[in-house]
Image (cartoon, rainbow, N blue to C red; front, top):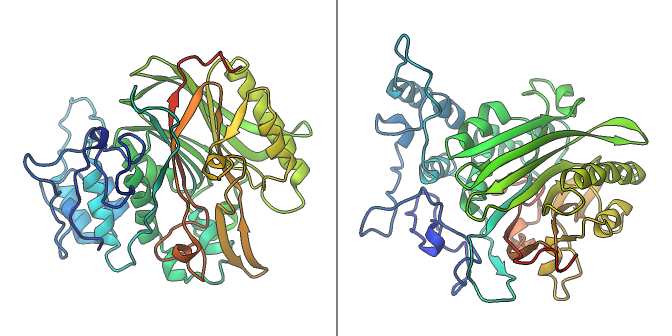
Amino acid sequence: MGRAGPWTAGQRAGRWELPAALPPGQPTGAGGRAHPRAKSKPGSGHWRKVPEGGCPMGGGGSRLYGALAQTLSSSSSSSSAAAAAAPRERPGQPEAGPEPMEARELLAECRLVLRRRPPRCRRRFVDLRQGAAGGPRPIRVMQWNILAQALGEGKDNFVQCPMEALKWEERKCLILEEILAYQPDILCLQEVDHYFDTFQPLLSRLGYQGTFFPKPWSPCLDVERNNGPDGCALFFLKDRFELINSANIRLTAMKLKTNQVAIAQTLKCHETGRLFCIAVTHLKARTGWERFRSAQGCDLLQNLKSITQGAKIPLIVCGDFNAEPTEEVYREFSNSSLNLNSAYKLLSPDGQSEPPYTTWKIRPSGECRHTLDYIWYSQHALNVNSALGLLTEEQIGPNRLPSFNYPSDHMSLVCDFSFNQDPDRLL
């Protein structure tokens, strides 16, 4: 399907979605869900088509104006027209909040920017439910190291990736397209170095509340013309959750503060009234730092035990752990008293094996194919209803990642979770 083609209005659980995001016959609720704010015209199964020569945010009827226009488009004419369409503040008038917008508007704009690139790789959800469908809406969580722009252009040396594929004006639209295609309720990101000028202003208009915690000594700052430090970001939909508590954690190792960070937030689900904790982290990279990562993991687990009151509050931990399943930090999480399991193991035939890779790139030292990214969850309190399959080797292609049709060297992980009815039974 071409990028400028029509959208279909998915009726599964009231959330819209692109065609082919789910396998034919996918049971309701196990796969993509239509965003509750996205509505089609009565009697129509298609969204309006974006004209090839125009930009929807440039007209007076669009709500993509001002900072949004500058964020998404390098066209000065589009930005000027959008800024002119923005309402003006009157003296003495209270400052207005960000103008809300619908996801389909932003997705259409991204597809317009990307119209000369190959289409986004399609991935399918795998239904992992063991019982009948039903109950409250599941909670969709996305984990993704999106690749810091400064590192991608300046330090990471992706020798088979053309520099043209890393241009921020288009790569950010590929990132947004991936997020918008799967519509997570909670979004956990690493290597974010465009939080304030891109992700926070855009996602806030879609109804997300965000938190950003930069690395104290980000390597992005060593790159000429950088956009500031990279760090972890956590977003959640305000119409689904209430923030109860938030903690920014600077991880320690051997009693010393390190350059790695985490965010942990306790949320209350509006629909069920249940509390749960969501955390995002990014551990130290590179071979030879295994003991260091292990110490960081121990510190994070201690913090999370305190926040969750020793597993009384269900927990989801997303992160780029920079660690294969053979490492000590992986065993620490597997054997923790928090009773955690790795969600993507459930995609294996025996439910016990991690995927063969979550990152695949080529550097001057050679090809790097590793499993480093995980979504951990309280297996006594939460069920994994479905998980998004990974890109195949054929989809990735011989030049590996990143590429013209995938924006990061890491793949996004997406899971749908539901609460167990009797969470204490399995503790």
